[in-house]
Length: 103
Image (cartoon, rainbow, N blue to C red; front, side, top):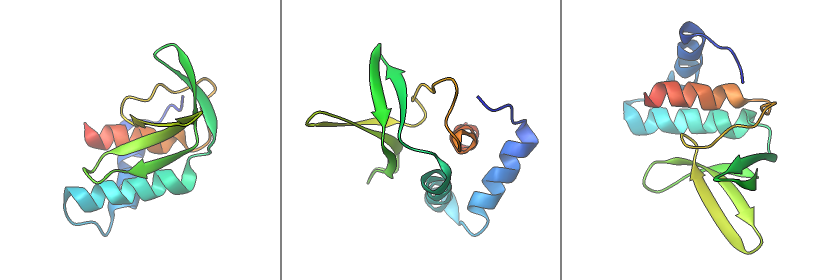
């Protein structure tokens, strides 16, 4: 996991949301940074089961989710709830920034 401090996280949030008006546009800006910078696929463990994160998505109800397909099932896990592996993938600092923004 990265060791970014509050000021670094807030600078990343500012970069992602510089032209955003309102919470929805800010979330979209952070989603865009996640989509561009998070190195997928990566494997993590969710509720004791290995899951491969193949991408991220922004749901119609405004949640950012990790896409974890398995066999014929497409599971979406809220990025705020996603356990991160160690070592963490490149770009994980954007998940940290989103978590900081979401409070």
